[in-house]
Amino acid sequence: MSKHHDALKALVSGPLTHTNYRPYRNGEATGNFDVSCSPGARRLEVKVRVRYNFDKAYTGTEQVDFRRKLVAQVDKYWSSRYRLLLCVDPAKLDLGQKKPGPAYSYPMLPTFTVEESPQTHYQVDIADSKYDRSFVSTDGHCALFRGTADDFQSTLHNKMQHREGLVGKLINKVMHIDGEDAVTHYRQAENRPIAFVANSTDYTTVGKSELGNLGRLLKQELPTWELVTIQVVGHTTKGESATVGVQRADKVRRDLVALGVPAPQLVARASKSPGTAKVPSVMLKLEKDPRAKLVKDAHPWPVAAHEFGHMLGLLDEYIPGNDHNDNDYREFTADCARFGNLAVPRFGVRGTSIMSWGYHVFPAHYVSVARALDEMIASKVKNQLLPRVADHVDFLKAVTVRIDPLPVKTAVEHENAINYLDWIQGAYRQP
Image 1: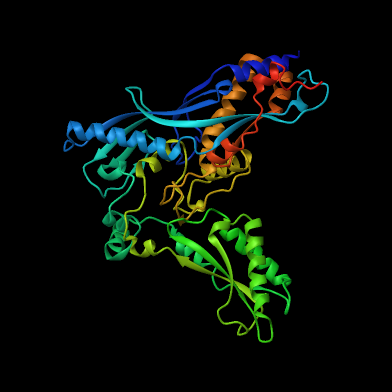
Image 2: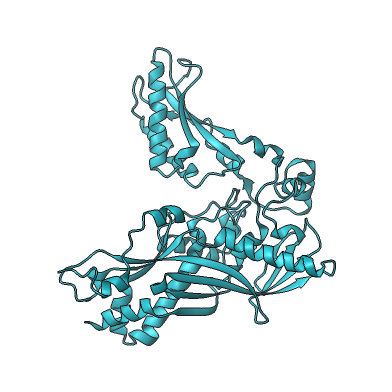
């Protein structure tokens, strides 16, 4: 067996740890956490150590309840959303195989927790108010408020936070937050014709280009509470069959899905006024969820989970990307490509991302943890397992970290990763 074989066995069998990890060290980035990993046990744990500083108005019972809710909220929204894969390409290593085999991967479901400790990453100051603004600072402070730990905020609070109605407009004047709302963002896709050749389901050159433009605009996960469906409407000119309109709409829907637009929110249909269009085309029409009108119902907006994202080093997404520190934004987007070619979340749009105005954790939100795992692997290989430069350079070329964008349920149901320890013991050895 080669030295690379022994190093790989030691790497996946032994624990990896990094305390006080800071993924991004420039500008406004705030991440600071502990991470430990045991690939052989498929375990990866991320922990933020905090010290609470409660307002005097809080009773002892309220303090206990706040702590419990905060920990539960972080676990609910962050833990085990997606898998991190430690991937090994045996074709690049001498592992005793007679011919190259497929890449082996170690899937791990990250768990996230907040732990109270005298040695802290952050001091959490809790104000006796439901409407103060929360934040995480680079000097190790976090400000939260009384309503933070609840999964659902009150209707008045929603209107204030989402800048709805007269109260919301006043709040926006006093405490402005950049970024357009998601509905306004997606309205940009309306009334833009995707042109077709007359009496045909073939795009014109201009229509094909516009399809690509709309696909890029819509392909990120659409806001689930603000937009329910996008009507893909086929229009026909005088003398064209109404059937052609449906066929055009179906074609655009399929092609948008192929470009990455979520299929469940696209509905193809013909225009209700066939034969009246000036140009044979397909246009998009957005339909809002009735609940989005003035935010009449309590809406999930887990503030503590959002601030925890900052503790992991993530940026606010309701602020346009070009308004962030260049290094922080550039490193984050580079990591999205590096750890799985992941879609970068929408910056400058108040959508349902956990780092914007909502509660969805996207695969890209795991990149700082993937970065920690990658650096832990490189450090152990270089400093302990293969200290000679020639040995560890070749070895690390064969070991990569990726984020599996599949939801956990799908990933578990379709588990096909090969357990490396089983392979070592001969279960998958090639003849």
